[in-house]
Image (cartoon, rainbow, N blue to C red; front, side, top):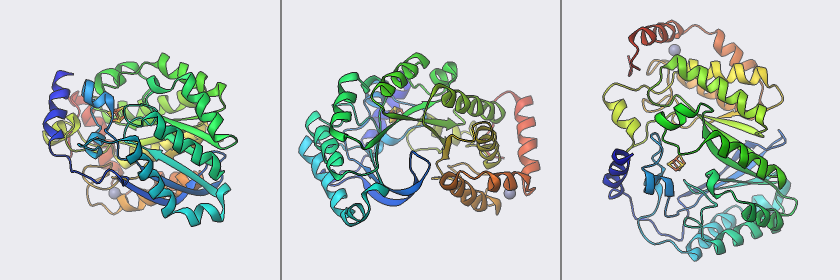
Length: 356
Ligand code: SF4
Ligand SMILES: [Zn+2]
């Protein structure tokens, strides 16, 4: 952990100064809403001081979000200005059909941590979203900030607007979560948080990492299938797979550069999505496609023509929840033999491999 803290400290000096009155970014796009209907979501990445877990404990081994955070002081007023900027930017779309809109307020950390989003700003944002009477609101938070009083307050401000909280569960294997990811969260924390959210009719989304450090590709596939099934069984409203992408300034990057880590194959991602969705046909199973096909993101053989094709198929699956495209992709040959050989060879080699 000391090593991770030192690694963060070294990289923090390279953060860019940003105008604290503007969000890191904001965009609108088609998305699958919590009831399974396709609508549009407005995503706003707020500029905050950043994840406390990363500052105080070195953070998770694959996460470079702290680099998005602001080196300068950020006040409640700044955060309110950032939020208002994004709402004004998309006001026409919201006004046109509010019940088609989901607003996602992300911070590259925890929206419910008052060190990141002061109480005054949090209340302002929740109240405003309740007044806009949109379909749903999504935030992200580590479990330790998901408390009874904040959930009660959110429910009160949002009224009938659906709320979903995304939590980085990453895996349901505590050993992997601890040693490979340094997450600092137990299964008990997750189950307790789920129960609390249920009490306030707040939905929960589990982010699951595909291929943490120190495990083989084959174990990563098994881990993701097991964890996805377990989260759905426990009552998460949806699961969102994040195939690992090598972020700058992380332990993952160090090992990747030394040839001791390779992001997952897309064949593995397809297999995971297929198996979990087939077992839970009514559940929403989504997959992040950012980074896919680049050398730092999930890829099959680099520059193989199947990468872009599969990326499109996964995007389409996330939106439609229709497994037929994934099934067809899994029947393709392309570079599948090399993937199978990699799985076998890595297993015999014991130590996880880099790119071949
Ligand atoms: S993954 Fe989440 S909890 Fe972990 S360091 Fe990144 S922002 Fe913090
Ligand atoms: Zn291929």
